[in-house]
Amino acid sequence: MTDAVVPTPPGASPPVANNFIRQIVVNDRAAGKHGGRVATRFPPEPNGYLHLGHAKSICLNFGIAREFSGTCALRFDDTNPAREDVEYVEAIKSDVRWLGFEWNELRHTSDYFEALYLCAEKLVHDGKAFVCDLSADAVRAYRGTLTEPGRNSPYRDRSVEENLDLFRRMRAGEFADGARTLRAKIDMASGNINMRDPAIYRIRKLSHQNTGDTWCIYPMYDYAHCVSDAVEGITHSLCTLEFEDHRPLYDWCLDQLDLPGDAALTEPLRRAGLRCTPSRPQQIEFSRGNLDYTVMSKRKLMALVSDHLVDGWDDPRMPTLAGVRRRGFPPAAIRAFWERVGVTKQNSVIACSVLEASVREDLDARAPRRMAVLDPIKLVITNLDAAHDETLAFANHPKNAELGTRNVPFSRGVWIERDDFAEVPPKGFHRLLPGGEVRLRGVGIVRCNNTIKNDDGSIRELHGTLDPETRHGMPGADRKVKGTIHWVSAKHAIAAEVRLYDRLFSVPNPDDDSDGKTYADHLNPHSKRVVTAWLEPALADTRAEENVQFERLGYFVADRHDHTRGKPVFNRSVTLRDSWAKG
Ligand code: ATP
Ligand code: MG
Image (cartoon, rainbow, N blue to C red; front, side):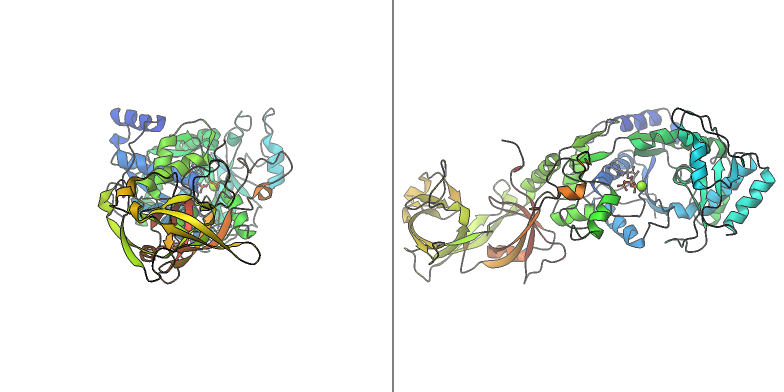
C-alpha cells in the first residue's frame, strides 16, 4: 500500500461541513502538532457486516484524511477469535470501497500481537502489570461498584520475576482458558471503574482467522486499541461516545509505554516489515449514528439473519451497507446524508426519512426515467388498428437533456395501473373512470367507453378511444385534462420480477423493550412484496445495479445478483414521496 492521498470518491462530494473534530484537526495543524500530519483509521471488528452507523465513522475518518491530505488506514480489530471470520473481512473491504473510499494501509490488530506482547512485558517489568489468578466471578466481586471502591487482588503484589515467569507461561499455553489474566496495576479505588486494574490479556485457546494457532493469549480491546493506534502512527483516534470513560485508560497505557521514544518496542514491527512511525494519538469521541425504524447493532442484525427473518446480510431491507447497496441506495447519497447530519457529541436518533430524502435527491438528478406497470390492467384503444405499431421518442430525464432520448413503442393495447382506473371514483379522483378522460403520458387523451368484465364481475379490460386531435403536434395537444397516467405497450412489454421493499420494522424504535416485546415482534409484515410487472422494452438494457425511476412509482434498481437481460429483476429503493409522512 502506498502513502498516497486518499482519493476523492467518485461522483459529487458534498461540501465539507464544519464540526468539532475537524476544528480540533485544524487547530492541531496550526500548532504544528504531529508535525502537521493527519492520520486516522477505521477499526471494525470483523464479526459481522458493516451498517449505516459504521458509514458515519467511515465518512468521518476517510473524510478528515482526505481533506487534510493525510492518511486513513483500514484496521481489522481482530482480538476476539471466537466471533471473527474471513467472510466478514472480505465484506467489510468491499463495503468501504463501495462507499467510495480507499485505505492507505490495510492492517490488523493481530499484525501487532508480538509488539503488544512486548509492550505488556514492559509493563510487567516496570511493575505496572501483574498476573492475577482470580476467576472472572471473583474479579467482578473485587471490582466494587459505582459508589464503592474495589479491593486489591491478593495477587497484586507478586514480584516482577514471578509475574514475568507466569506471563511467559500463559503465552506458552501452560494454563487453561480463564485460569489467569494479565491486569494493569492502576487504582482499585478509582472513580472510573475502567481504571480498576483492568485485564489486558486473557487466555483463549482458539484458532485465529489471521494468526492461526500462534497465540493462545489475546489482548483486550482497551489495551490493544491504543497501542495499535500508536504503533500505526495515528494522530486522531476517532471513536464513539461509549469509549469516553475508557479514554483515561487509553492515555494511561500510552503514558507507561512511550512508544514514539522506545525503539525496543517498535523494532519487532519493523523487522516484520511493517512501516512504523509511532505517534502519541489523541482519542476523540463523537455520538453514534442511529436511525429510526431499524436496529443497528451487529449482534441484532446477526440474529435477524440467523433466525431467517430476512434473506441474508444483504437483504435490501437491512441497514447493512450490503443491504442498502442491493436496495439501490447510491453511495453518494449515504455520504451526503452523514455530512448533512454532522458530527457532534449529542446522542440522537435520525429519521430514516432524512436518509430516504438524500437518496431521492441523488436519484432525481441522474436516474433515467422509464415506464413500468406494477399492477396491470389492459386498456384497448379501439380506434387504432390491431396492427398499429408506433415508435415514440421519450426524453430520459425531464431536466437533463444530456441523458438523451429513447424509443418507446406504442400500440393498440396498453397496460395501465389498476388503480389508475376507478369504476366508482373516490372524491378528487383525477384519473380514468367510465366515460372519463385521462392523458396517456406522451400519447394524447383517451376516453374510457367500456368496461369489459369477467364472469365473476372483475374487470378484464377497458375499452377506450384516443382523441387524434390531442396527439403531439396536433391543435388539441394542449387541451387540459386533470390526470396523466403512465402505460406500457402490451405487445412490446417485457415481464419482470419487481420486489417492493418497505421498512423492516413498523415502529420508530424497535429496540424499545419496555412493553416486554423485542425488536423481532415489531417486524413490518408488509416489508417485502413481490409482483410480476410489465416494463417498457428499454428496461431490458438495464445493467445490474443501475438506478432508474419508474415514472410515478419510485426509484428502482436492477438487482445486483438476480437481474439478467433475459430475466429482469428490479428492487424498489424508495417511493417518489415519503409515504410514511403524517397527514
Ligand atoms: P456494533 O455494536 O454494531 O457491533 P461496534 O461499535 O461494536 O458496533 P465495530 O466493528 O467495533 O462495531 O466498529 C468499528 C468502528 O465503527 C468503531 O470505531 C465504532 O465506534 C464505529 N461505529 C460503530 N457503530 C457506529 C455508529 N452507529 N455510528 C458511528 N460509528 C459507529
Ligand atoms: Mg465492537
